[in-house]
Length: 418
Image (cartoon, rainbow, N blue to C red; front, side, top):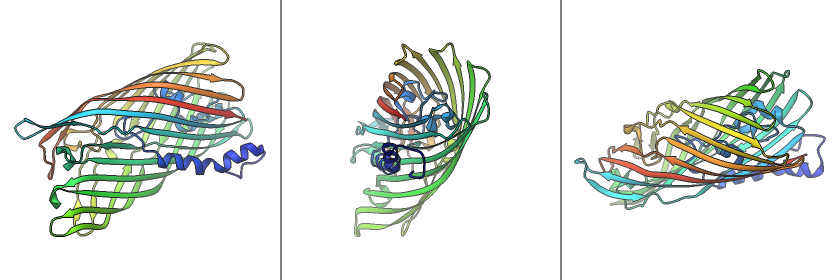
């Protein structure tokens, strides 16, 4: 980022190290499967969490790169922002035999994690803006006891994701603005289970991949109080080379070989509406349609063992969000939000990699802001439905049900304007 010109020395230092530091944060911290249905993440800033993810039209917010790239035209001058959202998921399960009798009960091993976000935006002139974001669009982690019945399906699953999104936006007039950006997407995948085909021994499949995607957005202001926006993010297909390990196979010992698979992260459309009641209060409505049907299978081909098919056949689904923002004074703002995620996982495509259903998010936050900086904090609670899971070949249960699922959320963001 050193190529940006006309910057102060301190700003140059921030930009020089932005990508390295931010990427290290995103890749080193496990994202938690709690933010949105499937394995999507929407917790890109404290303010975004506070408004339930309905944050497409924020004024002077560098995190607009994540929520709505066309709205980086609302950033004045130059801004650098960092955000961290702490998510702590909890849940239980019950496994049944083919007679419907309970044969195992347990809970997930709690893995509290962080969803970091890093953003930089610069206004070039009255018409043009550039920016870059580094945040997680997809990610999850789940773990269960290794000697449980459900461990034949999965006892540890993790998807670390990071998206680097260089963005250009243009304000055509007082009504129209638009943006286009690239996406450099990283995925690190790790799956562990007790493999029935190998005598119930623990196995690990672990790999990583980089792939390219893109995004586009547009805003239209009807008048000073009403605005709509549309954001499209492309699907990203990862072809992954992975390492496969099996420990203590009877008569053989440990097996170390290669595995190959494909993971498709779905494309999505987001549409939003913003209404300002006055200079102090506004409300946002947001709907995001994600094409989870691209996640039709998680097939892995293991050298020496052959294909390991795992059909998913998820359906497409909507996420609805409502956010309210009210300025108490020139320096203090309060925010509140609600979101609902439809369940997209079918009974015969469900597993213990993502063992959760529909979600309802409730959140509150506050913000301090002056001419040079903004500090925000938020608290949220995600009420997560259970999920019925069909056992497949190799599983040591017939059906299972997750229940009593929820997640606690805490977020903090800091923005510096130059």
